[in-house]
Image (cartoon, rainbow, N blue to C red; front, side):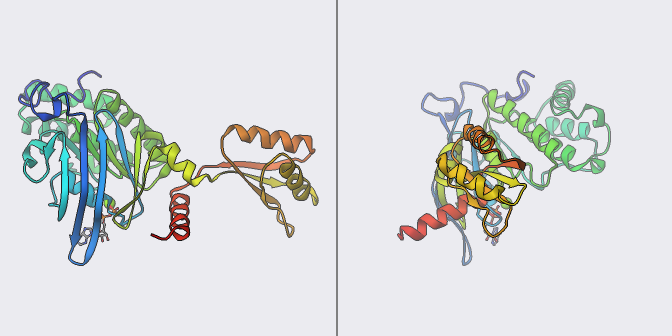
Length: 340
Ligand SMILES: Nc1ncnc2c1ncn2[C@@H]1O[C@H](COP(=O)(O)OP(=O)(O)O)[C@@H](O)[C@H]1O
Ligand SMILES: [Mg+2]
């Protein structure tokens, strides 16, 4: 699907070679420096800095109320900042909001689809509003319907779409103008696993074609899968940032949980695992499960081999990745150990 992130041919002015976003030094597509935002006495953002280079995905990870949507609203110029500076596609959010709006796509949890219209008509309408001729608008709609696997429901009213279809249409609508920078505010919250996977694949495709994506999420797994860099927000503050691996290394709570059968199995498994250098937890007081912290997925095999050598049978074995809660807990513990 070529040309997805390029503007339709009828749209002029935003093509290659014009504006700071295509200049040689303009590799940073999203930059926030010390951005703060207060709503009365609520400090929604407190000196937040983030950045994303062209063709990368930045994930803002945080629980409800962390300040994710507030930052997205500031970067998409729908909310003024209280202090700090921010640039998107090379333009300043305060001084050049219209330059930014022409270059971004925004999908929120409550996006701007007209549910009384069909999916196709929504797309055609937006393309026409952006200045495409009738034929170009229809062909743009066809391309997006195909890419988002919406062709079979294209002529049904959007009010009848499932959550997953609706979210895909929202995203398709936000891409009509060929934005270079795409903001996705909790794009998969509330979606079933297969719809979530489909959206992830779509986002990966957009990035391959050169788009820059900022997405907000409450799921560490989602940030892990999609993001080149992750910024963790908590109560309006950046509490950690780095790659997914860097974050997980600070968390270090990958685990294998074993459920064991037989009265002495937990004790024997515990002893064998300790002998092999692991530090299993549990198995005392008649409990039948052991939690074994590991660093790499390779160590799962070592755990299994150790059990096998000790002739212990596990009835269940599950692998656990660190969750956002683990990240928060670990960061909170680190703060407690090293008071500022
Ligand atoms: N328009 C507003 N008026 C007052 N408080 C707000 C407004 N928007 C957001 N807040 C507050 O700012 C904080 C951050 O909210 P938000 O950015 O929506 O977080 P998130 O998107 O991470 O859930 C919350 O405490 C929220 O209640
Ligand atoms: Mg939000």
